[in-house]
View (cartoon, rainbow, N blue to C red):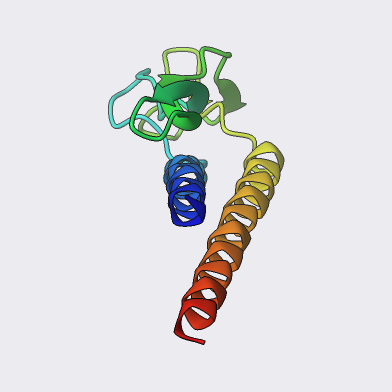
Length: 139
């Protein structure tokens, strides 16, 4: 029974790791494209991606686990820079820049990193408890 509970704990923490790993990947993609522009004149640049989470019942565990619900697109306006010499400039001389705000992405990265670390701590503690149980059974 104790082993079942610890195994469930590991699976729940692993679901958290997977969700936060996806979030970190999306943040990294957003940051990597923060200064990109369109490849065509007047075209749209990279649009910031967002991650939303949901809880899902894992019937085998009998517990709710976090899942990535959706990787969406931030529909906020693009930044406009006046640069008529840029190849992506529109007829008025404006270049559309991605709607990525580096500060927001850094904060998302920090929060995801903390959640990832918390899940790792749960896994480490669960493993340590399992090892103690094994040691007691050998004893």
